[in-house]
Length: 267
Image: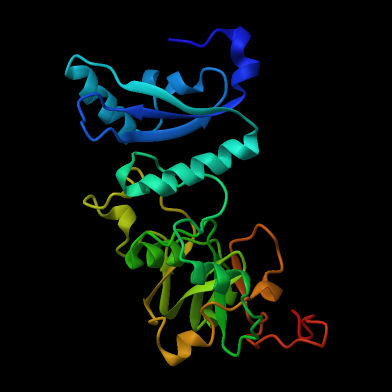
């Protein structure tokens, strides 16, 4: 099936969903956004293995997936917001979508979490910390996955060896604190990537010249974690787009700031 090209301008950006006609819950198994004939492309050849598996199962039963256009006539920005909201509403774990959608990772958040995030107070770090920026932040995944995604695998130099702690940071705000025990070459420690039973297992993962740390989560309710969790570390984010940042210089000296929040002991 295809949309006639003369209605493309009316469709603009839209949100579509796939349904399994054998599933009586009437819930979609996949939600996406697109233009023109994007809604039908996954039915031919999807890059998402879970979507392919479901579609093949439906076809083997002698049926076809049901396609519905949830809303159309949107701008790109509106479509991205609608996709994120729809996935959050149904729950990513109930869908075959690989990601939660575009935009903020703060979906399905409590009002207090949003208040804490956007009113995060600036903090000056007193310890030797490597800050790992994770965008988007996904509060719905397990602590084990937060840990694995924070600790591995980064293109780092010898400066990393001074780090005593690692912070998981989203939009400049500290979400998790880990105590680092040691650094190892990429792929040499147990990780979800090399666990065939894990949903995020990567069969053909290529080991790179990078590093991963082994450590432990410092529980958010502890005195030490409360020093930093929910606090803003934006003044330490010096290279926009880089995933790793430090609270200390190349000599291992914790950064000091002047009254304008400029670091005075670089490099």
